[in-house]
Length: 335
Image (cartoon, rainbow, N blue to C red; front, top):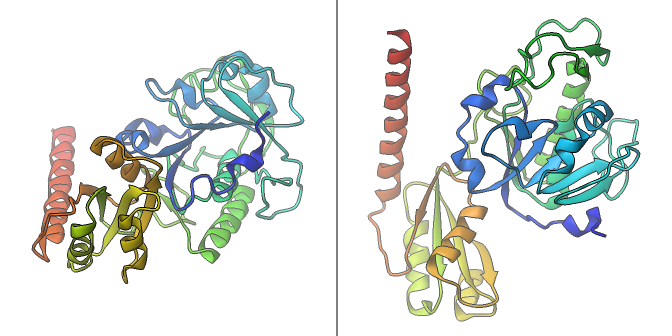
């Protein structure tokens, strides 16, 4: 039986998305979810065409009412030990969420639920080693909430989640406790930043202001597939480090190879990921993409050389293109 301990630092220095269930999730760009790792929560499976790598649910009402739907999910699920749950597909990892005091604990021990499943996801992501976490669909707004944590019965379509069927027509659910969840979020931010990690909230129109609203790391991630390329790799790394645009350099190479030795001795910071054999070029690139955290991703062949302004010029053009597209969409909406 798989335990939480097997996930410690499994995704060291990787990037992941933690998906909330707010209305803005419908407008999110799913492309980036598909090329990295994702955590989904509660009834995230109502989002057509998408299955997260990791599913997390700690609310007994949800696990009780939607047990059969959750049990059929074909991914890795994190479910509290104290809740009865009979799995049918995928794999279940039992976690202890009995901690009652605010804190940022290791999932090997008890965790604090923090009045929001998103906080549990943040603890799990930290334990797994993720360096950058991006929140999407975490709107943090439910209208006027008079009695936080109160169990209520839903009537009519759901206006506060991405699907009108999320909590509707007699479903039982707990009103959110936004104030206490903000305490938990503040603790998560402190823990991440103390270790040189970051949490960003890219949710559209989010009322959650604790985290930076936009990922501000490298705009460009350059993926170097370095197999049988020892004569070119040094020059490639020098070329990339001399770009005017600060670039995240990711080298994918064979374990124990000359290429790995060159990359590890290089004076500039390089993220290195090794494979036991020599895969195809697309497999190597996909490994690099999984670890990339930049806004834009490019392949950098070891025998390529660039003008020092190349990446900056291309990133600027892409930024302007995105702004122009946004303006056109706005005009079309207005008209």
